[in-house]
Image (tube, rainbow, N blue to C red; front, side):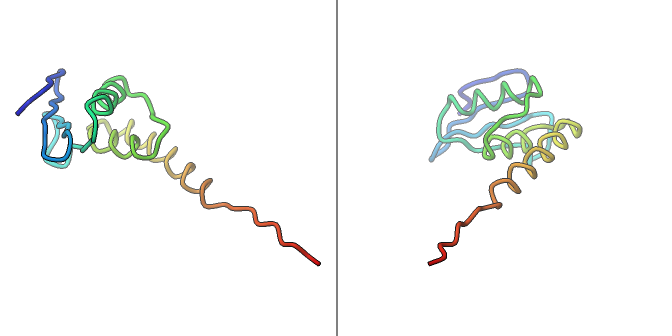
Amino acid sequence: MIILHDDNYYVKKGRRGYVVINSEGEYKNHSHFKSIGAAKKCISLTKNRIVPKSLYMMVACMRLSTDELYIKKIQKLKEVKENKQKIRYKNKNIC
């Protein structure tokens, strides 16, 4: 059942949440969300080619988009963000 239609994007209600589908793309151009608000936000970000801040939204926008330059832009930021999270400082107590 289609809940929302916005240009080439459709939002369907699933058993466990919502599915956003890009009708211009292939089967792989879809993403899952728990809330309708997050689904609408992802559509807005993808349409306007805005790079999101959260890792989950980055992956979702990469999956929805068919624009290669936008996808590469997100991938670069995603790699930087993932590498930043891996670096941890540990203070050793010397007694």
